[in-house]
Length: 492
Image (cartoon, rainbow, N blue to C red):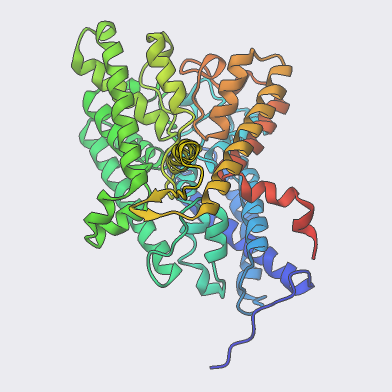
């Protein structure tokens, strides 16, 4: 069978139309996840219009272009992939805000967009003072939007796009522009299917364990969706601390750590490649950071809780929550000793593993710079020596070091600028810095004005809009967003 050639002229009308078509399809796939919330709203007699209206709008826009205006197979260039992914997250944030804005809860449009951006960036921040007063259908939508964005809507829809003649590897590369971009199987659709399957298994297992731990099914499902996505939002005002259960805290700690692992390791586990897992540099450092941090915090908390077991429970939970960028608090850690608070603050600068649902700088980047720092020290002693970094028992490329250094510089620059703008608006400097790191690293939890006993409702509206943009940039690991602001990108 003879196939039509892919469109080549990125500036042509047909190519632009094809990109718009693809954008609508991706957003339409996301809209599909409103169906469970709509069903719950109808079943409980809640405001269903909040879901019917955005679903109706997307149906009118998506269905015609999906089936009637096919332009042949489309292969995206990296440039087009970056633009498409950024626009997808922006439009999803506005679309996902409609259920909040149209609900009977009197949520302002700014707060609705902020909540939606938090969900699609998997940032566990909120402006809500009374979460338990929200309709259950809205709480379900909130958790669902965290969940499918956690893995990446581009990746989750990757298995479906070939049905519409769309190649999706460039989208997946643009949505996850970390150090490790590899196909786990020869076909990218098979990779997407496996990652989706692993994601589902983790979510189902966690929800079941929560139910066995005493949660109602609704709360178990919502918490399972958000924890596996490292979003950390809850259906309770006090979060998981509401249950005061060592079992629930322990299960949550384990799954926060598992969700922040590189999902490539699950594929290797499935294939029986245990040596690759044991030799994975990032995984070993990630585990080591958690063990050391949790151990130090535990020692400082023994006098506070009067029991090693209780100290270990709270220290492990909070260390896992911050390290994995889940951002859920089971205790007011701002009342803990300063050493414990200092360790948690340092974890805010680490993040999870590459190729995971976690945010932050990522462990692998710290590993690369640490190894390069060692090489520079050796170079002082042996000026003529040739040194290289080793990752996973293999010699790493030299350009990786440049990439990591550039990323961390840009990361801290964005944090500094965001801190300055936030502080100028009247926020105390340390709170502004903590909020900036938390938003950029997709944690949502920090210190001061964004500590465990506060939320983002008190920030000015223009700061909430700034935070929404910054958290999306952090979710897409900066490069995808900032490349769009370079003159070179727009030159043909």
